[in-house]
Image (cartoon, rainbow, N blue to C red):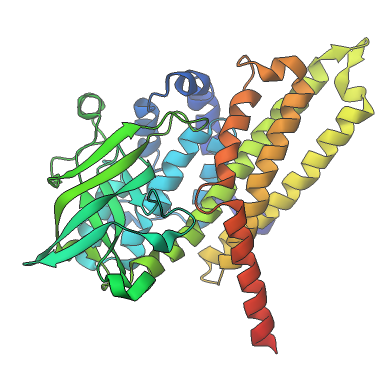
Length: 407
């Protein structure tokens, strides 16, 4: 892809900075954290120091004052070596912070965004429930208003940063008779589950936040991929949430979360693109060093065709991802383009990692090479923030809407 098509000199500088950090600080420990499932606090602190946890937010709110394109670049570059590090900045920024920036009051922004944008604490987004996954409108967590506050009861599943985070945006039903128009969203706070570690490193916890009684996290999920990313259940037992912590008006929670997911899908598309690119680079390098029948396997047409197909698909995915990001950055409608980019890039990540393992042969099936981890990391891209099936539904709805409006 022509770098000048979407990127200016500042974007290229961001890319080189994040690429160097990923190469020097993340790549050497990615396998270790995948094996141990430990959250990479030390590297997360370094990412916060580089401004990576608040890339698109204004400096007045504690952010880096950059743009959406810079954010997407950072996600891709980190994912080339470790998807777990990449999803940390993606979920924290898009899901944990953007709802407050985009839909919150001035008081909410001043109270919570600087803590998140600076990386002082981590944030998360609670939408998915046991019976409300693809059917996000099936939310069962309830919020009952009583004497100037809401009382929340229920739970959320598969929440990124569920344990390590301290600020969460969650949905709950405030009017059961209105369907999706009866769902509202709230800002909740709790202590991180890693208090000792966060105090040791000096980030991840803020004494200025008051943990809400009855708001806790469950056990850490033992996942196939993204194993260094913290994923847990959120539990609400008679949690009293001040009215001023509601985001927007009652009944706007579902609508605003759907808008948030559009942006999140561009992030997952960029992450998937990074995983695919990383796997391709590993396969390409291996093909010129591995010899069979007296010559590098890169000289065999069967290998060349696989590499050529991947290079072609990667070029297409990169255009789709950065086109969607450009539309978002410039205030254009991008829901359809986000779904297309996410669908194509996530499914490409699976194809690319499987082919990379095939090119590595038996070695690719071992943990001695990163392509095995990359394949496991790739799969969730076809599930999280809307499955591939949901993306196809979203795309179809846009196509039919466009068709009807054009008649």
